[in-house]
Amino acid sequence: MSVSSLYTLSITISITRATNRDPMPAHHNHHQPPCTRTHQITALLLVAGTFFITRLFDQSFVPCTNLSADHHRASPNLFLGGPHSWPETGYGSQISLKIYVYDPNEIDGLKELMYGRDGKITEDACLKGQWGTQVKIHKLLLQSKYRTRKKEEADLFFVPSYVKCARMMGGLNDKEINQTYVKVISQMPYFRLSGGRNHIFVFPSGAGAHLFKSWATYINRSIILTPEGDRTDKRDTSAFNTWKDIIIPGNVDDGMTKTGATVLQPLPLSKRKYLANYLGRAQGKAGRLQLIELSKQLPDKLECPDLKFSGSNKLGRKEYFEHLRNAKFCLAPRGESSWTLRFYESYFVECVPVILSDQTELPFQNVIDYSQISIKWPSSRIGPQLLQYLESITDEEIEAIISRGRKVRCLFVYSSDSEPCSAMRGIMWELQRKVRQFHQSAETFWLHNGSIVNRNLVEFSKWELPVPLP
Image 1 (cartoon, rainbow, N blue to C red):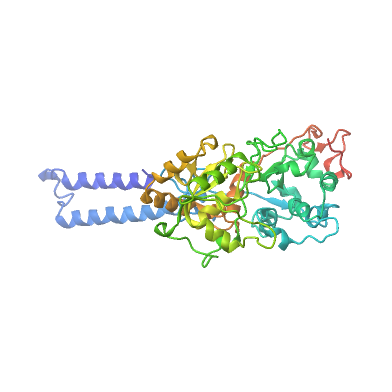
Image 2: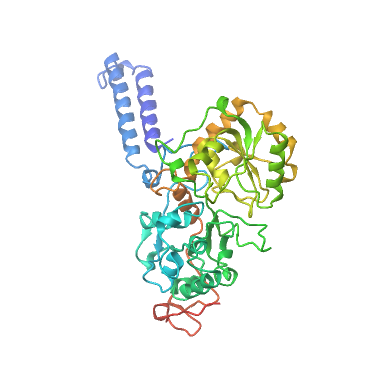
């Protein structure tokens, strides 16, 4: 109870006692007139007036945190495990973050990491496909209200790079990528200051940070944004660390995620031809090969078409999503790595994703209960039993899963972090959890007056480039 409420209550009790007590003895009547009905009504009006005034007084002093622009009461209820709203349950109520984005012109070699050795790789070309997050995150950070142009006030530093795209398009080879990263990092005093702990790198493919061959030497303490947890990476070593890195959603085609008319709309369950589908290449992977074989045994239930993703018979994006939406369940087996874009795409054609990749890592687990919006089935049990299980799920239950998925799929859309719900906003919340008040490294030291120096006792502001690296 508030102080004003207690005050009002005390007045009410006092007046009630005064109006209900026995009349004064007769010899006191000449000092105080008797309590009449008029007095009682007046007293009640006084109580009511006092209550409303004190309530107004209370509301004038609401804590500032409740008035924050980042406090979205009207945001969708994304935390499916209980009666809480996004983002309070998983993160808090306010983002307080400043990120410095390195400019390609300020560091020698950064342009090469973005546009290739000859500068011929374009942003538009790199926006396409499942690796477009490397461009989208960079472009959205440049427009972000959390961006700062002052390095000295930054909490975190973002290093733009389109190396996956540049490599795929012949703009850089593995050796060039490695050498260029090392050159770029050596020109970042703030990287040296923290040992890289406050620097952010995006690696948008299944290879993760392994695109940078020497990642373990140079950026093993940095924050890596990747869709791939690669715990069973074919290199037998994982570049993903649960405690410092962040899983991000894959890049779903903009034509399916935009507001309003999309490439195509989901089909009603009653009009879907198949129980389940798998759309992708075999790649010699056991789980995928098992699904293809299963579709041959049960072609009326499982669709696994021989799709062409290159050449003259390449499947168009509209045709791909037409296939994907024609089943109640979209199967997402492991490929070269544990993550698959198909998992995210399924939410936009409204089929239930079935994860068949045991080591997969999923984004924003602080706020999303994936057991309510998807199914995860052991990859060791792919076979007729899987289809029998899926067939036992009623359409009403499927509709309920799809409905819950609609509430959270906004977190898989790369739009501005000023939106109440977007992948970028989720990433900002995750990044805020990585911010430290103080940074140290094996090569930074400090003196009694708080000044930061290197091993030669040179103050930070006087460090010369290139700075020594591990």
